[in-house]
Image (tube, rainbow, N blue to C red; front, side, top):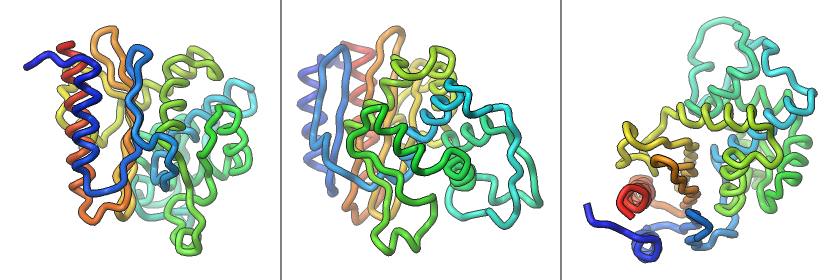
Length: 264
């Protein structure tokens, strides 16, 4: 495969973004160099909001206000639709908070997310996001709350804010080394790999990512690692008529990143 330096990566990413049949906001960072397109543009976050919720869980754990080994009762009446496995299980069950966090990320479990929102408090999560310097990220509704969504109440983020989350997980300015390492480990067990990592060889690359999608929306943010080199990437796409157009853009950008890492 042909070598590709950062300038070539930038040019090719611009080309892929310009071909996309939707609005793109992205930021890619490697070795103190950045590629940015509408990186401060505000998007409906979809399930990307689960990344700052994950960070807040670990932040509260570090402060001693949240015990990640505490078990939470999950009642049948609390079940919601959408992604995840908890709503498909029968009867009531108990899970540790750390297990809810894992399900929230690796299978994007909406019930697990809503339970964590109740546990942490929406106001506290938003305050934690401010302390993390997420300037335009807001949690305003629970997962699958389409009544709120239809009334114009949504969750928001930017590519730039998602980059901040990813870098916190690797550089842990707020989290402890142990918490940051565990957060990254959870994201590396991601089960949805059909976007940025779609054409990446996961046998030789490590990818820690979180996807998100709603009607007309396809997002992904990822830490992509090859040997001792990292690339941080957050790519948000909305205004799509055909979802696969967004997924194709994400897949192509991910492939370009892997080509840069492996052959530059």
